Length: 193
Image (cartoon, rainbow, N blue to C red; front, side, top):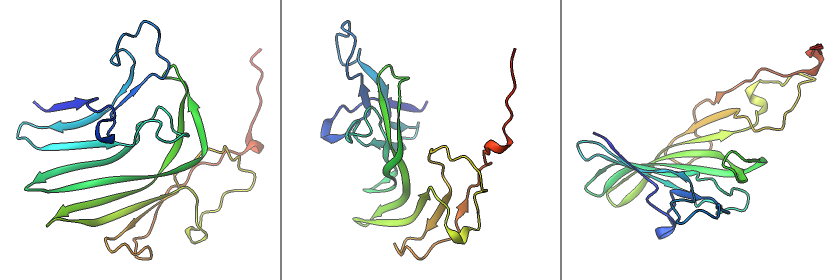
C-alpha cells in the first residue's frame, strides 16, 4: 500500500522532522528514547508517486521552541519538474506556552500566507498566493459590537487569493470570517450550591 516515512531528518542538511525532549529523563539511552514528535517526511503510493514534506527547524526561533512548522510540500515529480506549496509565518503577538509535551513548547508563530509554485523548465513559477490576515479592514464592512470582550487570541479574519503576477493589488474578493461576540453584559452568574 501507501508508504509513509516519519522522523527521517535530525538536522541533516538543515532539515528537521523530529523534536526531542530538551531535558529527557535519566533513563533515556538514545535519541529515539527522547523523541517527542516524529513528523511526516514523505508519502509514496503504489505507483511511485511521492509527496515530500519539510519543516522549519524546531526551536530555530527563540519564540517557537519545540514546534515543527511545515515550511513546504513538494509533489508531482516528473523529469525534474514538480509542484510546491510554501507556508509563510510571522511572529504571533499572542504567543503562548503549551505543556502537553511534558516540557514547555512555545507557540510563537502564526501562518501569514500560502504560496503555490510550479517548477518547470529550470525556473520557479508562482501560480497563486493566499494572504492570511488577523484583522478586518474598513472596506470589509464588519464592525465588532461595542462591549465585546477581546480575548487577546489570534483569530483568522480574512483570506485573500492573489494571482501569479505578484502584484499585491491584483486579488479576488477576500473570504471573510466572522465570530460570535462574547459580551460580558449578557453574562449571568449562577450558584451551584
